[in-house]
Image 1 (cartoon, rainbow, N blue to C red):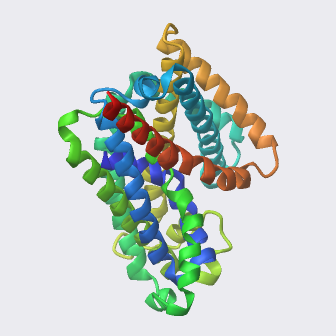
Image 2: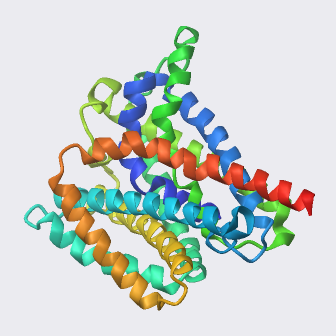
Length: 353
């Protein structure tokens, strides 16, 4: 559960969370992120507690049991549309970043065309195979990321993150929770994870503390990036993390001057896995909507639809800004409002029975 949440939440957010927090909360962004992690940790616990009531099943399978056939179908449609929007956004961002940082002569559409079949294959293999892969690769991702950011902090200037807290700006820190919320969206992927009923209290606690731990991971990213670039410069970059890492040098490794290549390779691996879990969620919901369709057909149709929508989104102006703005509302509904409403409805139904 921890690695699924880690790689899903941080797949894109690590790239620009430093800029977002520097703009909205200044040097007190660390406090804002930790406060947001607690709030979304509670949301994760709600999602897990809902799943544990239907042990061995996921939301696509039990939605109709709670809300009835009609409302259950509407719930599944909402999640399909939401995850489809996020998938298009992430695939397009991945293609753009890869072109800017690795393949400047390769068109974005070609990168997306080569990547979508990978996401589709992972989605085809199913939730359990994906979870095992996340466990193994998540360890590599986490160790590499922490090591690089600790090195960044040692080469940065600590005075750039001061003051850590200014009581006069408390209202600013609290207001910045909304911009920070986008970095915690992704908790809703737990809705496709079947959980055994015997994990009841453990699952909710694990989900809560996993999100809080990710909050501390974000703090490490933010503080090390600001120490490296400075708060006034970091707001000028959409990919502030990549810029900060490129400024990192390791004198004791003269033979390996491009440390950013190592991290960006592992970082983009995490990006790929984050998109893969969104594809898997889409596949699970679509298969529940069309139970007679073969999983292979669903995955191929999904890949074609995502690629076509990515091309349309690439041509549309302001798509990224619109998703960040509207997606926050949709994501909070997906990870908190709907799970909480379904949990209350399920409890009321069980109590009535």
